[in-house]
Length: 356
Ligand SMILES: NC(=O)c1ccc[n+]([C@@H]2O[C@H](COP(=O)([O-])OP(=O)(O)OC[C@H]3O[C@@H](n4cnc5c(N)ncnc54)[C@H](O)[C@@H]3O)[C@@H](O)[C@H]2O)c1
Image (cartoon, rainbow, N blue to C red; front, side, top):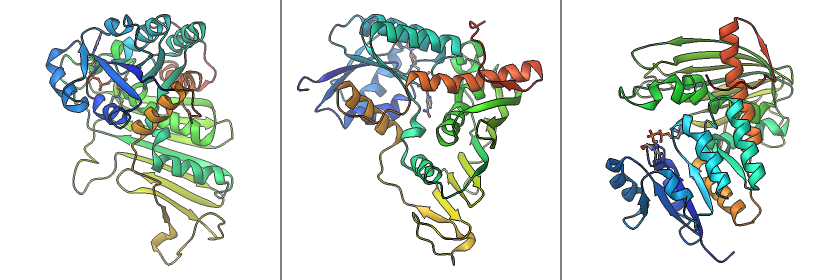
C-alpha cells in the first residue's frame, strides 16, 4: 500500500497522551486528523502530535471527511456506540478505546453496524499488547504451571475527577470503576484463562467521588473450573506513595508453579520443582521467582496501534481484541452489576438489555 492512511482521532483528552506516540512513530505510513470540541485542549494536542496537525471541532466533521479511512474513538463511554455506528455508516474502520460500550446491548449495535458496513471493529484493550502482560500469557500458555487453580487480579488508583467530569456520572461512564477500569482485569483474565462461567459481585459507592462505585470486587468461576478474584480500588494511594504497594497486580497459581505481573516490577515465574524447559532458574534466589525480561519497550497502546495500522494496510497483523471478543468483557462487568442487584450468582451468557 503506497498511499498514506488517514486516521481520524475522535477526542483529544487524557488518553491521547498514550495514543499519540503510537502515531508519531508511523508518520511515513499514516497521518492523523483530530476532532476535539474543547478548544482549550488544542494546544496540548499540538504538543503531542506536532504543530501542523489538523484539528477540527465535533467528531462528525471527521466522519464527513471522505479522505479519512478509519477512526480511533477516544471519547467518553456513552458516546462510543453513537460514534462507532456513525463511523461505520460513513465507511470508516473503527478502533475504540476500552471500555467498548456501556453494556452488551450497545456492543451488539456496534458489531452489527460494522459488519453491515463491511468495516473492521477493534477495541484498544492495551494490556493485551503490553510486553509484560504478554509474558504472563506466554508462561500460562506454556502449560508449565500445571492445572490453573486460582487467579487474582487487582487494580488500584486514586481517582478524583472535577465536578463536571463525565467520569462522575453513571450514565456517561456506564456504571462505576468496575465497568470503566476493572474491565482491564476482566479482559486480561479471559485472555489468560479462557471464558468465565459465572460471577458474583459487590461494590461500594463513595458519593464525594462519583455516582458509580469507586470500589468493587468480583468472584468468578472460570469455565476451566479455576476460581478468580478481581478487585478495583479507586480510593487508594497505594501505588503513588514512595513506600506504597502497586497499581496493577495479576497472580496465577497452578498445580506446578506460579507467576505474577506487578506494575513497576515486571513479570515473574516460579516452577515448584524448577524442572522447566522454558525458563532458566537460579533457585538460590529468594523465593525462587525468576524475572521474564520484556521483549521491547513499546507500550501496549503503541503495539495495539501498530497492529491495527498493519491490518488497515492489509498486512498480517496480530489483532487480539476484536469487537466480538471484547463484547464478552463488557458482558462479565454487566453480569457483575446484575449479581449485585439480585444478590445472586449470575451465570453467563446474559440477555442484552438497553441502557436505562
Ligand atoms: N487504557 C487506559 O488505561 C485508559 C486510561 C484512561 C482513559 N481510557 C479511555 O479513553 C477514553 C477517553 O478517556 P479520556 O480519559 O481521554 O477522557 P477525556 O475526558 O480526557 O477526553 C475525552 C475528550 O472527548 C472530547 N469530546 C467529547 N465529545 C466530543 C465530540 N462530540 N467531538 C469531539 N470531541 C469530543 C472531550 O472534550 C474530551 O476532551 C475512554 O474510553 C476511557 O476509558 C483508557
